[in-house]
Image (tube, rainbow, N blue to C red; front, side):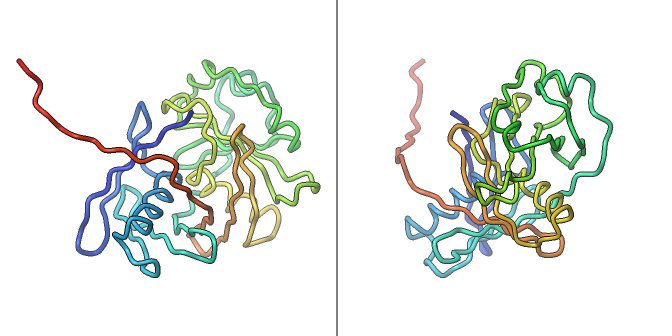
Length: 227
């Protein structure tokens, strides 16, 4: 299971927000931002029609309810063409058609949706690549209705494979928008748990639509350890 921990602190004009994997703090995270907004609305900290505003290492991020979705407003982080890092093809077990580097990750396009779905990378080798993680993507095969599919591997950051990665789509959306000539895209992250994302590219921002469900509640108490 992939784990994200989000810490929120109330401010006058929103919430300070930081994100952590089991290993590191990250600069941008969609999953935990979506969950944070969901909890603020569900538990009554924000009224249902009030925008959730978060002050983060990636600037001001917002979340709004749009029908049955929560729509995040994130910065686009386009990938620029880059030389493949040593051992990339061997680590992934696939030959890249394109390799780019975003501010956070390597973005790798492969030949087909079937290739993306069947990848069984050597995660120890992937962990040697100097980056937050590796996004692997392809155009949709035309049967599923998705414009593109992807998977995200980040053993460097304590996450072998992330189920659905909002921040990776900040690079994927501008990449596929340019290739397909579309500003609105439907994407699928093809991990074992998987998930669909509704994407809109608006200038230098990516609007990411998804859903959240509360599955667990707990209470953390603090006490003094006996000497």
